Image (cartoon, rainbow, N blue to C red):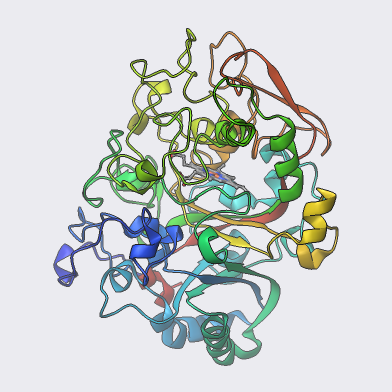
Length: 500
Ligand code: HEM
């Protein structure tokens, strides 16, 4: 088992980072996607992190217009191990390689292993993460999935040993790189499942399938993220990276795992026509706003951001594209803005409902200090599947044709799955009483929340969405996001690839 070398001296001199990638994609033709938002304001200064060893997707995200998730099982461990340490390792893209324009590969590759995969490779060290050890299939009920009948068969059980993440500008690049890897590994692996992600076309690039800009808000990392402008402070690197400062289990993690991170993968299908219909049917009736504006406001209040990405906490009445493009303002809010309520209500959810997706998943000042909640994840997902067809839009219903499945290939990194993704999904998103102590329970997260143990079509109630009547309950009788399953992985430091 190799040791992750903790040396900032090895870090090469890097180009200054640009600061407006997410915010104005058009102005950054080479980094056009908000999936690249984490390139924003990142410095190589590094706080003791070995950026040559940390896989690139974890802290800053691989640049991607296309991304392929290739899930495999290991059929010949001895051959696989030998190829991994010799021929595959050089393919794996580090954080430093992504940061430096001179070392960025055309196609970036990362790799991660499930517990079953580490076992297959003979790794006996316990990474001290029960969720990872159990695998996602065993924890499906805990996450609120309506059973596992909707799960892609490959995710059922613990068949998957590992995943390659391949990111590039074109499908051809990604496919070629996969062919290179498969060529090297030969019959030592077999494919279990693959999912091809792609940024949405045209002006929807960077927006998820419901139409909202994604990839905006990420935790700022102490000693690593520059220009922290969200007023939320920083989180310790150990909240995202195993074995680093701030990892509460640092002492029980094997040293070779330092700088690695647990990768939560979820294939989340999105029912887009159904969502659009729901939003249109529930348009608000705020005086002075047009029908369309009232509809848009309803949708924005489900998310907490407008489709442009502007936060409703700062733009509570109408979308504000200038705000959306302003990187120093767009994430600079805490939900604690009593000075600018646009609605005359004695509640601090006038600007943003307690139930809004971004408030349920990151309550900011609602819990005191954001950076002390210890429930942070770094997201690195990408949409998958085709655009809505005319027939689906007309029928206001998603096709049952599997070829038309669309959604989010959800990827989240953290040093502790129980405290990161699972806590968020179970204790916040699926908990109708969270945010606690409010006169009307906020309800589950309207986008991804589920009433635990319920059937797929069980209505979920959400309150706070109508700012003129915050106790009004909206009943969501369609699941807009359906879990198709996933797996928990460990994304090891690159040095460990030659020693597992
Ligand atoms: C933020 C969409 C699933 C956690 C966002 C944003 C959008 C979005 C549009 C706002 C943009 C941003 O700040 O990046 C979706 C969709 C999902 C989904 C369409 C499913 C198909 C999830 C899941 C989780 C999650 C499963 C975790 C349980 C978060 C977090 C934020 C966020 C932590 C940032 C909140 C903040 O810091 O303000 N999501 N999301 N999302 N989402 Fe999701």
